[in-house]
Image 1 (spheres, rainbow, N blue to C red):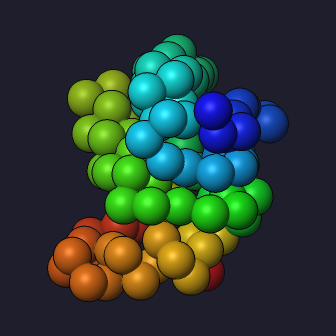
Image 2: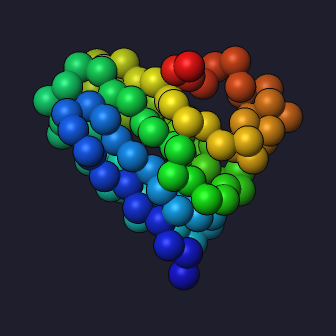
Length: 102
């Protein structure tokens, strides 16, 4: 099983770390949704700088987290998007819809 985790470092700052693939995604999906919906902050930032490796599943997770934030009436942005995730999003035409921080 892949090693990955998601946690809230401070209100609204969520860190995603490890290997994002088909084996780590289901747990991350549930935990991330819970953190986004249950957090007190009106804006969420997903920090992906700790992602070691990602398949297309990682991009799918980010899209799902965007939907969770929207459903909760919150804004969401992504920072530290690794190059492999950036390339996958670009090939799929999704890079421009991922709300990235500099």
